[in-house]
Image (tube, helix red, strand yellow):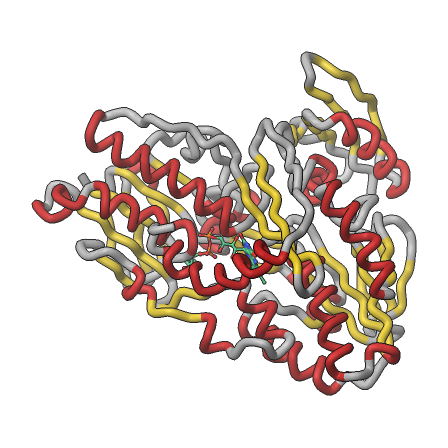
Length: 76
Length: 377
Ligand SMILES: Cc1cc2nc3c(=O)[nH]c(=O)nc-3n(C[C@H](O)[C@H](O)[C@H](O)COP(=O)(O)OP(=O)(O)OC[C@H]3O[C@@H](n4cnc5c(N)ncnc54)[C@H](O)[C@@H]3O)c2cc1C
């Protein structure tokens, strides 16, 4: 398994963290992990919903000093 | 001091002109040498592609000679770079010439990547190049009715283009008098019709009003040309008669082959705009990996920052400015009104109510672009 990829989407209003993830997930192999950093509260809910719909694994999210860290694994 | 700019598009042109004006005397005396290498002798006004696709602009109207946009003193060569030798502070071009530099700026832009989705290239229409926009115009002219689906990949340049094309198609078929025979169906990758929430709030009712149907959370997975069916990552299907796509983008091939960044996106410091790990290499415009809009206005504001820093490097030996993530986008709201969104890394966009005045300014910008590229606006 490759090193965890960080998608630093802090301060991204357009395209925004979910769009950054949709682009970035294709750049890692199946089985690889990604951590999305976001300063947008909405994406903390939006990203897990999308992961569920598409079928990737949500490994957990937490907030630290105004930054949401969303961890996931590409499964397909 | 040798300053070398790669790419004569929006970002590169503004930057090189700003530096040439600020360092006019140094360029004249030969203390500073300013060189631009590009892949074309023409400069394309890319938003014009939207108008070409619906027959409102001819292809020729999109172009100016690149040399005519440049300040005196800039050495301009149409000779694309093929090899970056960053450890030696050199690049090698297609003609075999080697250029040395003290400061390098990379602004080679991005390109659509139709091969990113199985079946897309063979079965979709596009409009992000002159050739595809002209072809789309002919297809639209001949279209007699049926379902047109818009589907996009990410990342793509110009986040407003999906909305602009769907509303332009609505107007186009109304003008042709066959709007009642055409279903316009819009898809979008996330859970609303545009990534900017306030834009989505305006655009969705506008689509309802115009009878445009839409499906959100739709990410293309494959296209079945025989059955004329789209399959999404989310497990849904959509049938179509004509598919128009803004596919996912990549940076230029030369960036990939030289291993400067995965998919051609160069890892770039979001504030200083230098390539990560390289203090004398700056990156701007579409080819950065910064998580903001790939748009001309982004390239413009980044070019202002990098330009000011290059001038400061020459005069003080240190950079003076940081890029704050500023982006400005016009938003066409129907055929007669427009508004704009302005935001940066810290400030979310807060578009005001659309007005006619902004619509006229947006139209004027189609011409003012050329003044902007010269770095005068
Ligand atoms: C249909 C459409 C509509 C758009 N509408 C808008 C809009 O309304 N507002 C907005 O802000 N933006 C808009 N954009 C986006 C905007 O045009 C781009 O984001 C902008 O041009 C990016 O600037 P850039 O300098 O990074 O790259 P570009 O302007 O694309 O320039 C890249 C340059 O690099 C050169 N080059 C490529 N390879 C090499 C090489 N190997 N060596 C040397 N040179 C090379 C090319 O010849 C070109 O001159 C639109 C784009 C499209 C396609």
